[in-house]
Image 1 (tube, rainbow, N blue to C red):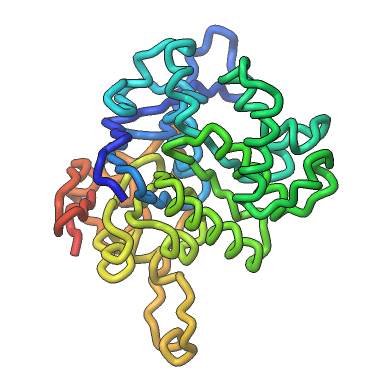
Image 2 (tube, rainbow, N blue to C red):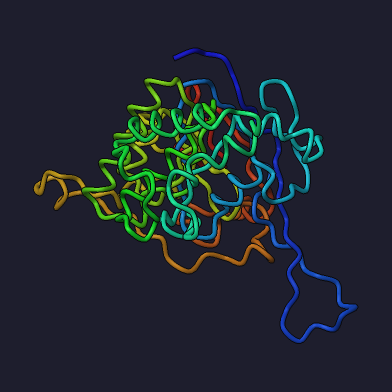
Length: 328
């Protein structure tokens, strides 16, 4: 694993204009804050796990990095180039170095194309002059890498199971030999045994190809298994960022502490006696987020300062940042 920083995200903000039902055409649209002021860096060979409840901005963050959704402000610096400042045609040469694996394996594959065509499509798009014999050889090579047999190349997506479809999605991402793969909840639609196979496959490929991964998931056990560092999001804001072991052994933010307490422990005697931290109430609306600390409406430690002042990110240990006035 090299220590070269390949991706730096600085103060990234993504807002969406939202109109309410019954609004007049001239009514000004409301701003929905999907991603708010997020910064992090990623080195070659590293895995950044991104966790948080539904609607906290995980997928929007991933899509903003690859310019699938427009960012309001901030920087996404890829190998020294700010992608957000480039046009689509200028960003194209860098886009082949960043690939995505999507949540629903079947829905992300074209049902009218066989898997040979699906896997080869990125190669044909970015390198249209590649000879057909080379394309077929590359397709066979990546199929072998992800554990798919060569003789399946002419079959269609509906003929495969969910786990096999996800392997096809991984093969499609690998064919351009990217430096970064963004995995947007790649195992949430799969059963537990297949989840383990896909996660272990990604880890093996990462070691073999020195890939960097951004791994988005709900399952904290899966994230712990694959990640070198973990970012916790809440309502579009980053509340904690630390190495994987630090997050699990000494979480500092009250929200992270609650998430970690919900992870099952395999030992029944320990599981029975552990303290479960409950988060009461519903997730506030991102259209009208709470003032100050966005978590204060559900936090057991909240005091008056939390409503008046947004907490700054502070380093509580080496490579361990947290946004809380009362972090442990």
